[in-house]
Image (cartoon, rainbow, N blue to C red; front, side):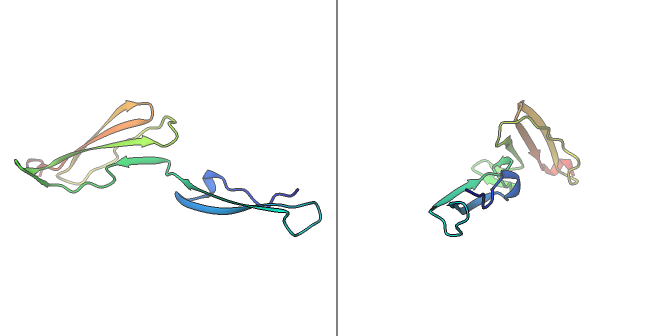
Length: 112
């Protein structure tokens, strides 16, 4: 048998993929078996929700804050650090577990 190629997580952008696995007898260019392979490569990190629009409306008026959860898809530990935020926006990053952070965002008019 000979190898036609490999797909590694690091070689592929997040998203769906499909490939063919071909099994050859030595010296024969025609495969004796072809197996379709498909899957999904997940991003290394996930943010939920993946977008925030502030302010947002509620029954009690406008809401100027939100919370997001950032997790590792592999459960490997990582660090998440806020480098900067726009004027009028405050963000606080809190570690909740070795591979999970809570991000609190506040865009209250009193911060401007």
